Image (tube, rainbow, N blue to C red; front, side):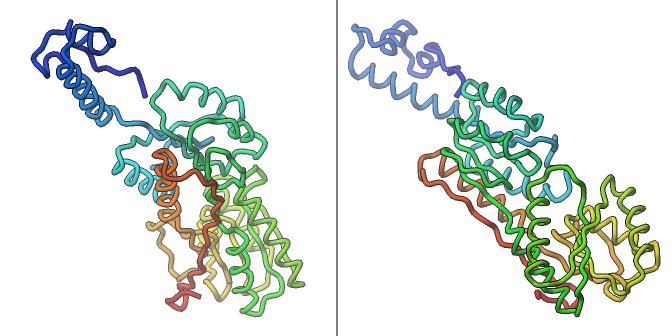
Amino acid sequence: MEESKITGRAIAKRLGISPATVSLALNGRPGVNPKTREAILACQETLSRQEDKMFPDKILLISAEISSPSDHGLFKQSYTELYRILNNHGYLLQSVTCDDTSASFSALLEQLPNKQIAGAIIFAVNIPFDSLQFLKTADIPLMLFDCDLRLPTGDNLLIDNYGGVNDAVEFLIGHGHQDIWYLCHSAEYNFNFTERRRAFKQITDSLGIRGHMFELSGELREIRTRGQDFLNSLSRRPLPVLTENYQISLGILGAAQQLGLCVPKDLDIVCFDELPEETLLPWPVPMIRIFHGKKAAIAAKRLIDRIEGRTDINISYSFRTELINHSIGDKS
């Protein structure tokens, strides 16, 4: 916590005694009646608690690229839940952005002890594993999203990427497909995407079916344009596709609309992660649901327990996904 703003004058005014008497008591000097000394120390504690409420401890929300998680697509769900729970427990959530380098994060954490920081939540999905090794020496409670790094003062919360990909592949195989296309977002490092690609290869290899990968990178407009080229290059209908994230899903579905294709008649698609609520589509689309809000709630509560000393056990928690088949109005 920052240096206390409580002064002897504040205590003296509260108790109706002289600042000199307060100074003697606070510095452990003689000349103060025991009852008065006790009242002064009790008043100091009361004012300290009030000050804590006025200047709450901060929880840092650290990310490499997302300067404002509350404005960034599906991260809204996580941010809203984190803010709600931490605020209800008297903590202030503060977003900060760092370069994806250990030096940048290390320099930030070195400043924390003097800045009233109780703990940190790190969106590590786009931070290379090696750049996070320095966190093993951090002395504040940590919650690490989307990176399986063992921390002495923190927990890991992961998405079950393998399970989600497996459900999607089995869903498409159930429609009779033996050639499945995986549309990936970019070649840049991303923990979840790396895990999904690895899972896709392992699962298709183990099942003896043909898995193909195709990259659709860039902004949404570029993804849509490249998606049209991709769909035009393949004549098979329906074309079985698994998309890596919701940006790819929006791009390829927009491309299909522009080409006059239909789901699932022409494009038999499963989208990894749900589409934003404001998305309007002419057809229902099967999706792999990630429970962003529930995931964030677990993270917030675990971090609070760690900060307040209710647990010292490290966990690595894999959050299961769920296949939602909107085409039949129910879970599949």
